[in-house]
Image (tube, helix red, strand yellow):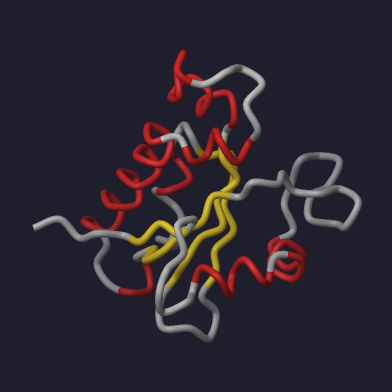
Length: 137
């Protein structure tokens, strides 16, 4: 089983790019399913709210945190445990080759063009945008 297999089945997740090559743990750049996220945020957020506000909404972050925690609780080792994740505030770009016209993602191009976000996600002191998996006891 790959590190992202169970994570990709979450309804609030559109797509995921796995990170962590040559790192101590696996991470994920998450492209959220915006329609599901808007439903999670509910009436407390205007329909035209910017993506940053939508992804920062406590119900939305909570849903992704819960999914990340559930995956961590069922993982059998570091190779299939997503330890950290970041919600992408920009959709994959066709213009720079992150996505194809058929909707497929190029993992290599996403990692190349979002390298600064990957670095941010792996900082020793996580930023507010980074979700860290919590193992449940």
